[in-house]
Image (cartoon, rainbow, N blue to C red; front, side, top):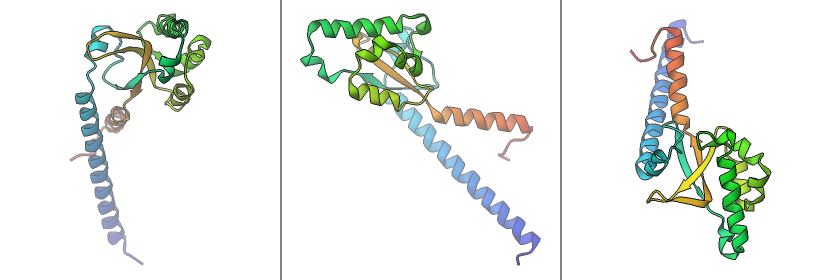
Length: 171
């Protein structure tokens, strides 16, 4: 049976290993976050007040792939339903929670099967907003999906834990 000192040494080593792996994981998440931010230009969203903030990443714009087979009236109906959803009282900031969007009958009626399944797999914290192309032009028949970046949440939790205990884990 190991002595108390041996057990304590082992616990200290395991804690250091765990802290190092946490730090490596955080560094990878931060690097991934900055890479994503550098690859996706959110300037058109910022200019039009459709950017939910730093804690969100643009997952992408949704286009209905059946567009070329739709009648012009169906295309304008889709654009109208998306516009009505985003201009609703819930969409005051141009972005609304996914649950609210999926609860809107008009919006869900113009979604393709792929879009419906994709949105249903998104986390509750995801938002839907207007879609813009690289030149900053509104894409009326598309919508943007924003996902809360988990690395930011993890950093906040660690900050809260560190300030709540009065001690920082790093020495």
